[in-house]
Amino acid sequence: MPDTTSALNASTFSGRRPSGAGDLAVETHGIAPLGPDQRYGHPARLFTVWFAPQVNMAGVFTGTLAIVLGLGFWLGLLAMVIGTVLGSLVVAYLSTWGPRTGTGQLPHARMAFGGGVVLPAVLQWGSSIAWDALVGLFGGEALSLLLGIPFWVGVLIVLGVQGVVGFFGYEVIHRLQAVLTVILFLTFVVFTIKLVGGHEVISPATLQGADLAGAFVLEVTIAFSLAISWASYAADFSRYLPASSPSAQVFGYTFGGIVLGYVFVQGIGIAAAESLGEHTAAGVQAVMGGGVLGAVALLVIAVASMGSGVMNDYSGSLALQTIGVRVRRPVSALIVTALAFALILWLHAADTATRFQDVLLLVSYWIPAFVAVTAVDWVLRRGSRATLNPAEEPTVRRDAAVAVAAFVIAYLAAVPFMNTSLIQGPVAQAWHGADIAYFVNFLVALLIYGGYRAISRRGRR
Image (cartoon, rainbow, N blue to C red; front, side):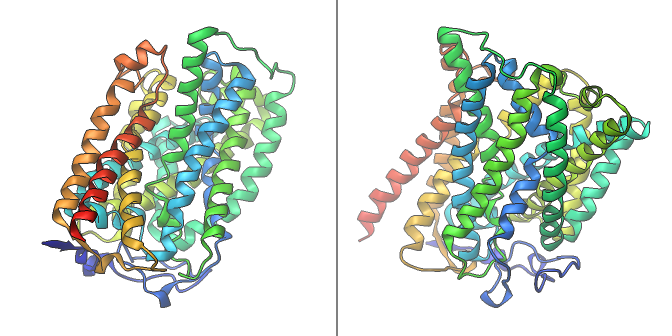
C-alpha cells in the first residue's frame, strides 16, 4: 500500500510567503509545496545566492589544506578545481527540481524515502548546525579581534545577526546575497593582492609517488565535500521560481555561482597558504599589516561568515520541519543558530585545522547516497511530466524501506575508504591517505536502490 506525502501540507508548514522580489516581510511559510500562482523571480538571482556564501574564510582555509597536504600550488589547484566542479554539477542539477515542484530539497526527498526521510533530515539538520559552526568560528574570532571583546561574545554577535536574517527568510536572504556578492568580491580581490604580494605563490609539491597520489585524491575529496555539502539545500533557494523557468538557466546560474565562488577563495588559500597556515582570523590580520586594512579584513570576515551562515539557518529550519517537528519556520531557524554556538566553542578549543578538516569531511559523507536515491526516484517518477506536486505523490512503503536500507548500507560500505583523524579506513590507509568514500557511497546506493527500482518496475508492468 502506498504512503502519501500529505504531511507536507500540515498547517504549521504553511504560512505567509513573499509575494515578489523586494517583499522583505517575515516568511512563515515552511516546507509545504508552493502553488504555481505563488512563484516569482528569474533564475539569474541564483548566481548571487550561491556565489556570496562561498566567499568566506572557510573556503580560503580549505584551499590552504592543499599545501598542508604537500601537493604544491599547481597540483593543489587542479585537485581543488576537479572536486569543486564535480560537487557543483550535483548541486546545480538538484537546483532544477525547485521550480518543478515548488518544494525544498529535504521535503522533496519524502517522495523517495516516505516516512524514512526522518533519517536524512536529521543528518541534514545536524549538518546545517556543523556548517554554521565552521563559518561562524572565523566570524566570531574576527569580531573578537576587531572589537576587543571575548571570543564567545563575538560569536554571539555573528550568530545573532545571521539568525535575524534566517528568521526573515527566503527573500531577505536573496537580497542580502546579491549585495554581498559585490562587496565580498571587491574586498577579497584587494585582500588577494595583499595576501600574495611579496610571498612565494607557486610552491612545489613536497610529496612523491604514491604519497603524492594519495594526497591528490584526498584534496579532490575535500573540495568535492565542500561543494556537494550544498546538495541537500539546492532546491530550497529555487523553489519560488516559476515552473516555466528554463532548467538550463537554473542549472547554469547555480553551477556558475558555486564554482566561481569556490575557485576564487580556495585559489586564494592555495596561493597564500604559508601566510594563513594558522587557520585564524589573527593570521589574516597580521598578513594585512594591521591598521585600517587589517580592521577592514576582520570586518569582512565577520560579514562573510554571516552570509554563509544564513543559508545553513534557513535550510536547517526546513530540515527540522521535515523531521516532523511542528514548529514555525522562523523559530526553527533560530534553533539551528543557537545550537551552532556550542559547536563553535568546541572547534575553537583545540587544533582548529584538524577539527576543521574532520568536520568538513564527516558532515557530508552521507550526501552522495542521498543524491543517488532521490535522483533515481525523481527520474522514474517524473517521466515526461513538466511539474509535479510532492504532497500528492504516493510512495510505496517497500520502495521507501529499500531507499532507507540502501542509504544506510552505502554509508557503511564507505567507512573503509574514509580518511579523517576520527575514522581511518583500512583501504584509505593502504592507498596512502586517498579518501574516495564519497564516490563509494554514491555508487553503492545507486546500485542497490537503482537496481531494485529497475527490477520492481519490470515486475509491476
